[in-house]
Length: 213
Image 1 (cartoon, rainbow, N blue to C red):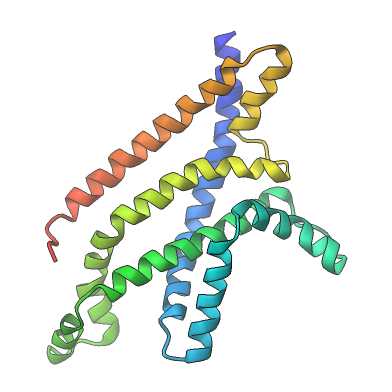
Image 2 (image 1 turned 120 degrees about the vertical axis):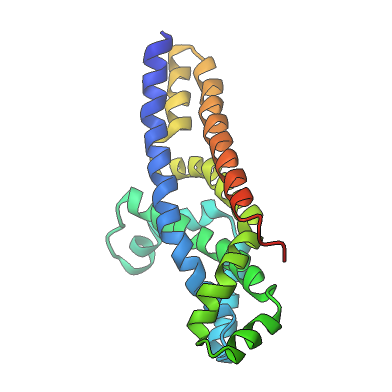
């Protein structure tokens, strides 16, 4: 019985992994765009962006999933987007807003003098950002980013609220067969995956350790 359960849970975990990976692909760059918007010198854009981030961070991801999946049909009479697409959209927007605040904090933590020194050397703003600032920002945001990424691993289970098959759903399906242990077994998948991510981020932090500032 152990092997069939493992195979079924692995199938669910692959859906979990797909949600996790696609969310990062879209949320990481989108978060940087939102961060630049929240730091814009154009006041309306700045406060519009920060207001949006405040709403997304202040409401549950589960609620956002439900609204994005059911909202277009109920409010505008449109066809609901596919369940998996709605999941990726909701997760990407949610995590992009969290990432944007981490990016913003990292960028604003760099001393202004480093920008001025780059300008004195004749560097353009883009050269200063990519050659001087960026690696320092990555070093400073690594710890909070690792926390958010590991949280995302566990948050993928919320996708089942709109009918996405994932590992918790796979484990829970065995309850109908009188088995509870597969549900606990799902925890091993989360623990192993989170442990691997922790090791990866630890390695990356050490690689960036030459930035002490």
